[in-house]
Amino acid sequence: MNIDFWLTRWTRKEIGFHQRTLNPYLTQYWPLLHVDRARSVFVPLCGKTLDMRWLSESQPVLGVEIARNACIDFFSEWNVAPQIQRIGEFESFSARNVTILCGDFFALRAEHLRNVGGVFDRAALIALPPEMRTRYAAHLLSIIPAGTPLLLIAPEYAQHEMSGPPFAVAEAEIRVLFEGRDIEVLEQVDISDDPDNARFRQRGVTRLVERVCKIV
Image 1 (cartoon, helix red, strand yellow):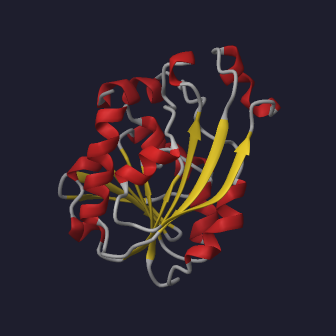
Image 2 (image 1 turned 120 degrees about the horizontal axis):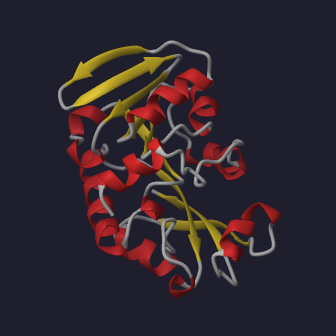
């Protein structure tokens, strides 16, 4: 999995991973993280998710996204003209309490995230193959302030039934990736028969479980 893969997906608008509605787990469980509303919520590999709009109603939001098309679409679909400026290796798009840094997640440094008080990951970890998930988790933990809580959503299915993304991420792997942190499974739901997940059945997935974890 490389940057060109995602740039191509966005250019061709092959974005079946984009949720057209607000994520229900976010609204239900985000308050449990007790993030200071003066601190930012970090949304890695954010795309143009509507979740950032909801979060921005109560606190600042910082996203990072490699595809410039996604950054432009986010604000365009919100009918907002962002302020655009260059911040080192990143192009920053900012308006209405939301800032998206357009660039490589792995180029982020702790100074970019020093005001972050919480992390919401619905689409980052599961977008990466196993070897990159290890690198992703290590880099994330190295750049967020110590003790920053995370809300993580990840699917689990038999990986041999479908090639990702989204990739299957088991609870055991989550515990290895975030070893040393307290991990609580808030909800675990079998969504195999959910009509919204027909595309997974079409690709051969027989059982799909969605897991919501609080990591502190």
